[in-house]
Length: 255
Length: 200
Image 1 (cartoon, rainbow over the protein chains, first blue to last red):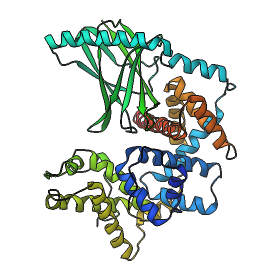
Image 2 (image 1 turned 45 degrees about the vertical axis):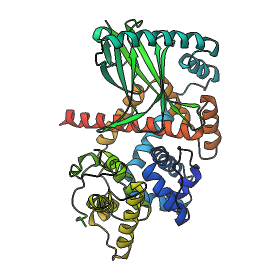
Image 3 (image 1 turned 60 degrees about the horizontal axis):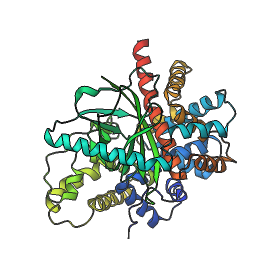
Image 4 (image 1 turned 30 degrees about the vertical axis):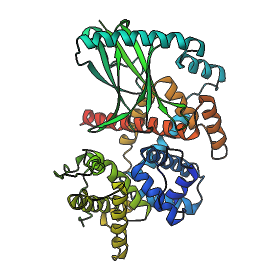
């Protein structure tokens, strides 16, 4: 009897017990099958491994737990070196000159990156539909494969290699977002301008595997876009239909 | 069984999947380039968790047996092919557990040899980590800083508070933090390789 496929919400205690070798064997076999078939659960397992490494470093594991977990880690490629990397990482974070945590500053930053207030959404939705209809009309008259670019998460605007596309390359642009790891069944991508105004949103996107990359692709119409920096916010659709914010990608459009 | 002393190919250097035709669409999905690599990574962890000293060999054995059987069973097999893969893995484990145990020489060497006092590689890695942390966008840098600002006594409470502040579930926070760490690891590895090239 096997577990149903999970949506990444497997209790973390089960995964810890699985890695520490304390889960009952029948339950462990069920987790094994789920790991083979559920990308979200596998990613959660990898995150749990990192947690256990951190727990080991701060002495939060009992001696039997530490022994069991190190035995597991030793058998993985590059396993032990992850402990050194994690130790360096924690030391580096601890040595940073941290400014006091400011709830106000954190919330202000989150507000700058948040989607539009609710009362503005119908207007933007209407504008988007009109824009989309216009694009569809012209597209039906003459279709041309849109120019594409692959975007990687985590770049800042100060980086010298922001992906750049030209607005004149066509009537639309295909943006392919490198997920890194596939965690949700469907995704939502929202294009924002440099002032954090939402330009367009695509929902129900799915990931595709292309050689060594997992990509979510969506097309944006060029009409109405000005040269400048934009960012794309990628969210994963949870089982509850709410969205989990995942990654942000930067794009520069030029004439 | 492969010789444990043979160098192991990285996941993305595995030999191309041979041209196996599967008429079951679910088995076809397994034959997409890269898919068996993903399955292999998970099988390695499954065998490692079971205490096998050569989990990569056993994962390769499992995949070889599955590939060999696909032409025979694909047309008539019903259900998720990954159940079949799991079943083969269980059989491979049973056979392994009945064999006399040996400790691979390279595993013993791992414990006997301690690195000399050369701190240059460690310093390079430290500098690379600093550089890579500075490349994170402010939101990610803040998240990873807050996520690891704990000691063993208040970790759970601090992280719950962080998840609440960000408006996400705990598991989503775990995955976000893991992804940032994963990106950092890749960045540090690339940076260290480049610094090795510069020093040579």
